[in-house]
Length: 377
Image 1: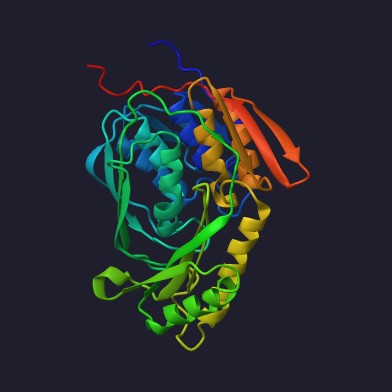
Image 2: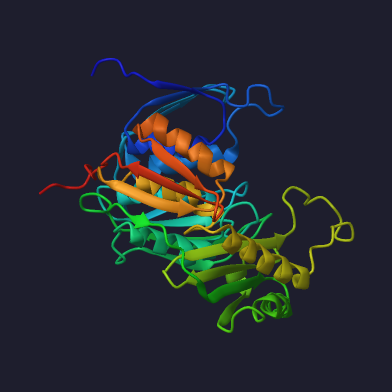
């Protein structure tokens, strides 16, 4: 076997992505100084949960964490995929945090993946499960991911602080590699779709949100449909909350999305009901989310800012062919992703700002990752 050589990294930033790239590129990593100076040093519960998830879907992966949780050794195994898997995502981050890396790993697995995830389906920090269905899955299809067997079912919803949601994710495997894209024309917005949801509150909250959002959109384009999804009983999870996810579809088949969720913050169960702070009224939520969507559209680019990291990862994992994409302003997560890609996959992007449109053009030659774990017979 010989000695395993580990790539040494420091700090806790972007741990999820480092673990993802480590697994895809089969590079063992050693991360030190994980929040060494913080009041609560070491790995947080959602990061440990993500490591458990990696152990669930792969074979022969090896994780070592020291006592304080500030040092992590990770030797990736082979992604096996498989059906009827289950994972509890915990309550410190929503399911959206786990979905992005999970989808990419599933594509390069030995068998198609089908996994049930439990936890929080919608919160204001991570992309909601609705955005995943409306925007992330079409983005994957552009890179040649087969649409059969690619789906996300929302069994029940759950918002913070107590969760209770459940989704089932199915990901097909790609038989050889992804396909490179040239994707630079964002087109004009032709329609806006959306879905609002409410759990354990009156259905009127949704109607008010939708009415407020439409009030802004109807001055700009006629084709606006926002559907409601009111859950009751067991499907509503354990906490009250409401939210909305909007997606603008353009003439060149780009999807630009935003979402928000309003629920009580985590960690104040011991407060009296009277002391609970007021939640943002649904009318303001509707207006704010509509303005956010218009802001994303105004920035230009073929995707919204939350999907930049995923887009760059997909481009870098393509065969050794040129991919060319246009995005709006580069967000910190996108920049961090570019750095991680260079470190793990050795792929450099050529970044060219276009002052006339305020957008950024990125080109790269993929690393040519092939799905080697699938059965070759």
